[in-house]
Image 1 (cartoon, rainbow over the protein chains, first blue to last red):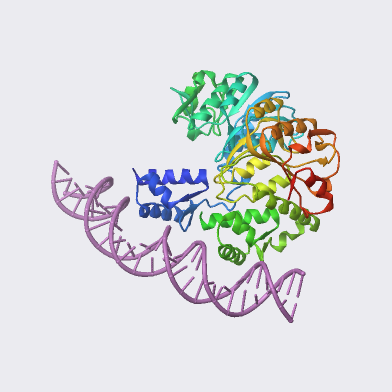
Image 2: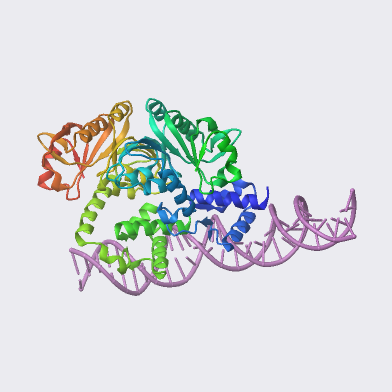
Length: 249
Length: 249
DNA sequence: TTAAATCATGCATGAAACAGCAATTTATGC
DNA sequence: GCATAAATTGCTGTTTCATGCATGATTTAA
């Protein structure tokens, strides 16, 4: 394994868990603790993490906060949210997924917008509970702590009996050959069920996630109506998706 | 647990409660009081809190934001939570309701306690998602915005098929003639279902709510095993409940 | 004033970090 | 392709750090 690759894994792990132990990383990456420590030291000197005795933590002060200011790449996500907002109309019944981009979207919903939102994300439900005119229905299930989303297989049955005007989902990866993909199997099953009962499917993905693969298939491109990115919709990277009939914003 | 992580937990606790006791932190974090004291000393030297005899307080610049009676109410709830905590054992499957007293209870659950918690309260689920060893299952449904609880009638059917070692519920009112009562009809139905599938029923109620009536019946006193209040369990106000076979803490 | 709780200090222990060295892998020049 | 230099990695012994416990001092509350 390459050094840079290993450090990338360390960083992504860190951003998920908010903290890492040198001993855990050593076991997970199959290298000595010394190597891990050297990596952490290097990353710390670049300011990418905060090294502490026994491991490392994210640099942000508040270990357990999901406040807007802490959102990674906030600017990009706000740009995507603004584009997605145009797709929403009064009285819509929407399913909104988890993730920071969707969090951004629900944060900018106008106060006079009256819609119904189904979601499996706790932070999104909490945020929407502050909105005067939006009805929120939360899917239940076992809480995935890292992502703070609730997922139960019973729920998938329940979902298949309903329908929605549109769904807004983030993405772990997508490409022209396979379609939309997810890291977790449970999440892929859930999203597939959601896609199947939504009249319109809107995928929100930063350009860096586009044309990357993940382990589990959600659905093929033919199910996707709109792709929202942070960048120029006319960029050559996205032309393939346009040709497949997807509206790119 | 990392030292920095522990200090982050201390700070987040402090900002919520406005003051903390070394002994409480020691119990919650499963470290000696010496360690807590050293942490507090270190954080105090960084100006992140104000160390006082027995614990710590938030720094004076934020002091304006807390009122004496808030702290007083809070102390009552903390006292109830501590009593209730004694009833919880490792590997229990619990149902925990909404409300600030239950929030207090989940806030003081020790870090090494491994239990399964079902809840319909979003804030409780969010808080528990920070806990390393607790599995959280969220009941879904329509969000009642004021209380931030999710309630659906389908859920009641779902609940009736499970069972739990114990449930911890707050109370809108209870008396010797009728039993436990609720303001909202939906909540009363939900609580009734929960009571029916729990081996032990623990009601947490401030003494001011005891001997008051509400509109909708949840269950009779015979279903209640334990009553937790903030005050003296031997007070004459509670003797009637003891005579009915309820353990009063 | 007195008893209990809380605190500071020193010390012991185990874990983690570090420095230096040797082995291995990777890059570079010829 | 081969030799050499550079970087990376793991190992050893030593040093530093984090923590709990014992002891005696200090503070608090009755």
